[in-house]
Image 1 (cartoon, rainbow, N blue to C red):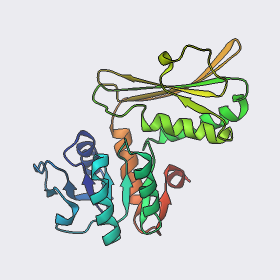
Image 2 (cartoon, one colour; image 1 turned 180 degrees about the horizontal axis):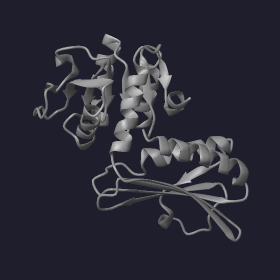
Image 3 (cartoon, one colour; image 1 turned 90 degrees about the vertical axis):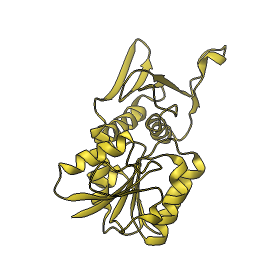
Image 4 (spheres, rainbow, N blue to C red; image 1 turned 30 degrees about the vertical axis):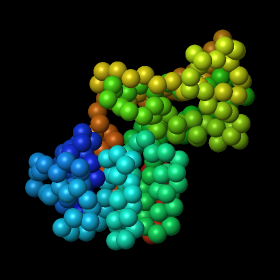
Length: 250
């Protein structure tokens, strides 16, 4: 039985993770971390991981980039594996998360959905075949409460495509500020915010007289929650290292 602590326990994703864990028999929640310490289930919620009454087997983080310092400090000092599923990290924070993998098992990806990670592989294959002759645009849609834009998943898709094309592309986020024709070496990134859209991503390959669109749509936050729980169970007992969805599905 894997003992899990949820960082961001009182958030929407934190509660979704808890509900998904309740339906499983291979893991249980033994604690939560959140600035709001109101308890809603049979596990304690503390403001700082140092206050946890017991050391978990693994921590799932769905909180806020501002929590990274205290979470890394705790995990590195106690040797606790961590699944980082929070979005909005800056480049320096991402580097620190990856560096932690030299000391503890770390699972990090911009999106915990198996379908999205399949979309990444399909986009890489399409870029390998079409990249020199097709314009590439990425459109992402999320709910009106999402703060960061473009989404981490859109960036993950763009980075995967760009690596396939020998990092020859540059990203354009704000086309209205430019009065010129589209550069062949662009990857356009477009963010839409509205309503309660859970998450939709389109990768568009636009060529001469034909358009190919690869799409993924999530209708529930549970697809991300289940992915992070599977990652947490997988991570327990692993050697220090940086793990992602490719490790989980292989």
